[in-house]
Image (cartoon, rainbow, N blue to C red):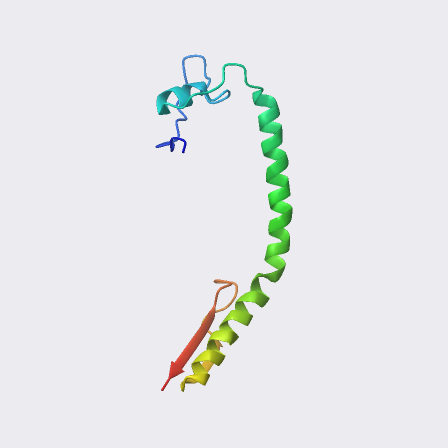
Length: 108
């Protein structure tokens, strides 16, 4: 397993560079071996392409977030009713404050 970065270095050198463009200074400090001839521009382009794909998937995830949370809360409420609790499902605050605002209140 690779080394974990302990901190992010953003100090600038005398020439105004951060030393992060090719990753060498940070890799040296963290003790990570970096290939001498690496196509950093291609790796960055691939990273941006991957980031766009992940963002598209997150859009789909957001569409189903609320229905799934309601479904899970209802499922938990039904379970509690089956084992003898009186259950009340409510919103405890407005959705503009937090989208996860479902409250399950159960009493024996």
